Image (cartoon, rainbow, N blue to C red; front, side, top):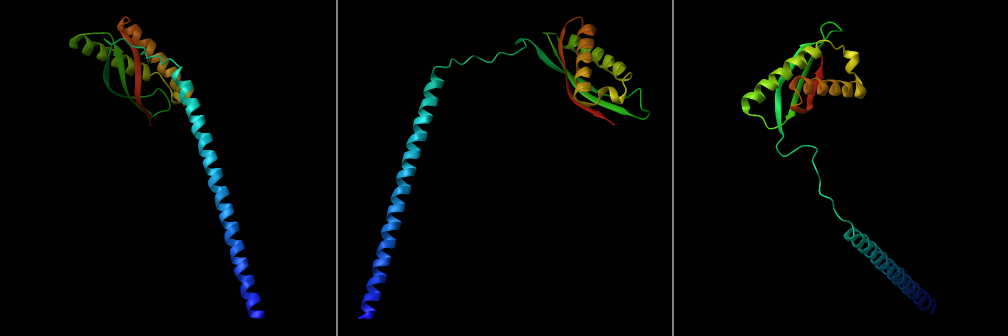
Amino acid sequence: MADEVESEGQGRGILQWMVALLVVTGLSAGAGTLASFHMLSAVDRIVDSRKDVVETPVTSAFNPTDRLRKISPVTTNLAAPPNSWIRMEAAIVTDKLNEEEAYALTAKVGEDIVSYLRTLTAPQIEGARGLQYLREDLNERAVTRSGGRVRELIIETLVVQ
């Protein structure tokens, strides 16, 4: 008789365990369903609010007739410290020019870059501020040298050794 009571107690314990497991599983499924409905409604609100936004077209700072022309890579020594070299690859944005004018213009700007870089020292072009000053100076010189036909000089690579 003791065995029957013990087995009946084990059966009841397992049954209670299964009921508790089913209740917890049901609660988890319900919570997951409610969370997904909440997230879907939030996404719908975001999508609806984006429909009211008028998308502005992206405009370029350059004209459609402007062209990007590469300047031959420039390698020269710096004014200081001794045995320091700089190599720069750049391009210019120009108005509509024929090929001969563009070739002559890129050659003039390239020469001017070499003569300017020879006057610099390594500390003058260190860091973000030095690079920004270099870019501004080269832009100004390129616009002046070209008589306004260069819109911008773009530094592609710069290596100081």
